[in-house]
Structure formats: structure tokens, C-alpha cells
Image (tube, rainbow, N blue to C red; front, side):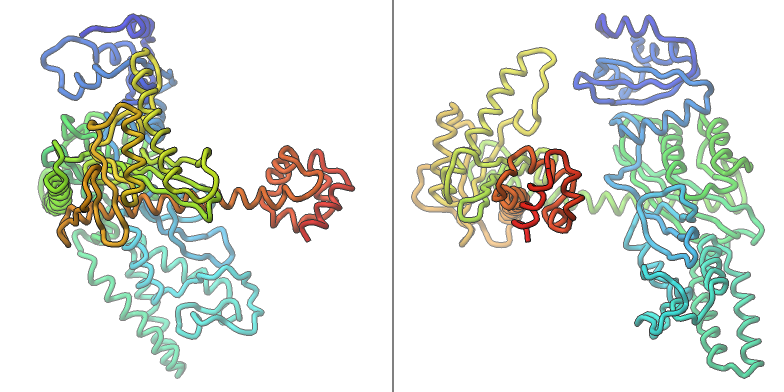
Length: 621
């Protein structure tokens, strides 16, 4: 393997201490994060010419253009730093949980006098209690809908004094205890929330026993209405508890059971949650970056990420195989659990081993179901591309489709949109919008011509930059489309053809115009349009592309129009130029806030004296 002089210099100066390393590609993007007891030995091993090296290691080494390293004081510190760096950079060669956004959690706001229960995607050190992460926000809300009938917690934001004269509708339909009107006091309400928390922790029996005793006492006191309500609560609790499978004695350690399933380049982990001896829930997490990676390494990567996100750490974690980092991960999990012992082990027999087998079976079935769905989606996309290739007479499938649209209001705030579909799927990171600069008035044809001219000039500039080492190229314009669609009929298409001719791309970029009314497709040089077969996958794809370009254009236009509206109101005020307008908007944030400001608040803005402040107030009022 050839190693650049830059990398040789780094490899020769690596320390022999414990730490983390970040490997970057030619675009300075972090592609792998690792940790090592001996940085020098570990990092240099990636560049050994050895036929036994994994394919993944060879691919990684071939992309490395730069390496950074960070020295830490211990292996535990290295583990924590590694996890934080992976979470921050999401490198493509690291095993990572497939997730474009944060997972949802159930949050109990214990820091409030009358705690609310909400769903959040951000865990904070704020005194609240969290449960999760969960993979489905819908399932979380469904769970809370059921629990709220048993534990009618607050959902409003009103200040609870107990002195309100009327409660809201939720009190009338028994979905709130009514602390706002003093129907329960603070201690009674917080006890109910504590019961809810215990239930989520998997400890339902003490709650059932206490509610049973309260029901019997209410019956003895002839308070039959309260006794009936408590009876209904017991029945609801029992219905939920019946769904939780008893797998161990009640005093068994709280445990998580993890199982891995893999097929081709896909992988998922099934997690069973055992609390109070019962299987109280399960979640499935899809993983990325697992190609050519050993099972043990995949599992270790998942564990580190999952328990970084997890709201609670169990006493023990059961795995299908040993992992190399078990000792240091146990140490880290113990620190997260407040110093209490955490054991990671592989069950060999008995109920634990049977439970692990069940988790593995569930993981395999889940992955198979997901793959079937993915393959069906892929098949539809491939079918749509094949249909377009045939119907439009293209040389190959249109794997990259670009579509353009124009949006304005009577010629003002004109914006052009560019959307990109890759393999039949929206590629939103490649979307771009163009503020129209050279066109005055409502001229969509000229606006389309400006947008396309700027787009292909960017492509030409990118081609020139590609010849210069180290140049950065905008991926949106780096490639030519396999199919270019303009939203409109012959007029828009004619402008597109003219732009391509000037750019020397005539015949190299297939282009069509799509008319809105009858979904007619216009071709250059043809008098009659084409109509795709109704209900065909090809037509559906073209419609999706066109609708996405239209949506993106309208959104960009509204944003620009809003900004121009803000500017135009302030521009009518004598003495307020661009600099002072910018200062006012930066200080107050909006014209409405400027309207509400006092003279003293206005004069606090740099450049605004008392006379100008009075002028501003007079004009805005």
C-alpha cells in the first residue's frame, strides 16, 4: 500500500499512549473513529500489507488522507471519548445505529410540583426521570394513551394552585385528577405519578396490592363511587400486566437481553427488557456500517451507542457471544449506574439461554420482514426507472433525475428550485434553490433560463476545479443528470434546450417538459406530447419528482417573500437605511417586536436616537 509523505509523518510521530484517533478522507470528513491503549501500534496496523486484513480495513486504509489523535489518561476515558466522537461525526466505517434523528423517550417532570408526563427526544440532566429510548414515537404515544386511563396525569401548562373554579374537559372525562381545582392535593398527585413510574419500571404488583386495599377500604366506608373507580383501575392494570410475560422469579435481576441478526450487508439488534422477572418490552434497532465486520465487533459497537442513549442501565446484560471490550464497557456502565455492579455475560443454559434464543429468533424474523419491505420498495423504484427508460427512449435508466420549477407572486420574490432524485428516491442534501436576479416581472420562461444557466455554469466550474488538487466541489452540481425535467410545457422546454446548447451539452443531457394539466410530457423537436400509462410506476415517479420541485419552490419563495416584506416595511421609514434596519431586526427579531418596543428600548439599539425612535414608532403605528 502506498502511503503519502503526509501520512508517513503522522505515523512516525504517533505517541505510544492511550487515546482516540480520527481518520479523515481527502474532503476532511471523518470516516472512522477508534481508540487504543497504544495509539502508535494500533494506528500503524491499518497500513500493514497483509492478505489476512479484512476487506473493510483495506477499504478504510485506502481512503485515509489525514489522521488526528487525542491522548487521554485511561482506557475508560478513551472509551467515553470514542463514543462521543462517533455520536458527533457518525463516520461511515463505524458501526452505528441507523437514525437520522433522536429517539423518543417518556419523560416524567419530577422537578415540577405537579409533574407532567411528556414525550421528548432529548435527555437532559434536569431532575426528570426518563424511559427509553424507543424506536417508534407512535408506539410511545399509544402506550401513554393506555396508561393515562389508569394514571390520569396532567397534560396542560396551567399553574396549579388548587384555587381554580373550573377544571378542564379532561377532568370531566376522568383523564385528569383535577389538582387545579383542589380535587387532589400535591402528595396524592405525586403518589399517582410515582405509581406510574413504578409501572414503567416493571413493578406493578405493589401498586395492584395497594389499590386493592384502597378499594376494599372505600367499600367498607360505603364510598361506592370511589370503590368502583378503583376497581376499574385494577382491571385496567391487570389487562396490561397480562401482556407482560413472566420469565424469571420476581426477585431476578433487572436485565437486558441482546441478540443480533444479519443478512447480506444488513444487521439489526433485538433488545428484550426484563424487569421484576417479567418481559416488559422489546425494541429493534437497525445498524449501519456493519459490512465486513465481525459479529462481536458489531455487537460491541451497538452496546456502546445504545447505553449512551439509554435512560437506565440494568444490573446485567446477556449477549449471544463474548465481546473483546466487555471489561472496560462494564466499568463504564457501572459508572453510569452510580457505581453499582453491572455484569455482561453469555448465558450457557437454562431459562437465560432460552430467552436469548427467543430474542435471536425475533431479531431474524424482524430483519427478514424489513428486508422484504425494502426489497419491495426497491423493486418499485427499479420498475419505475425501467419504465421511464423505455417510454422516454433513454440510453440507460435515469438514476439521477433533476427537476426545476419557478415560484413567485406577480413577479416578486422569484425563486427557482432544483430537486434531485437518486435511484428513484429524493436526495435532499443535493437540493438547491436560486433567487432570481436578472428577471423583472412575472416571466417564468426567462427565470427558468437563468436557473438552468447558473446550474450548468456551476457544473463547468466544477469540472475545472476537479483538475486542481485539493479543490472543493459542490456535489449538487458535480454530475450531469440522466434526465432533466422542467415543470411546464413547450415554452419552458425550449428555454432548457437553448441553455443546454450554449453549455455544449445538447444531446448529452436528456430533457423533457412536464405539463401540469394532463400530465403530458413534451420532447425537444416533437410536436405531439407523450402520456405515460395511468397507474404506472413510471408516471408515479415523474409526478413525485414534479410535486417535490413545486413544494420546494413554494417553500423557498415564501421564505424570500417574508424577508422582503420585513425589509420593505422598515425601508419606508425616513432615516432607516440598510445598516439600521439590520440592527433593528437583529436586536428585536421581528417587525412585530419592533412595533411593541418602547422609545427607551428603541434608543438602546446602536444608531437609533430619540428623534429616530419617535419616527419609527409613528410609522409602524
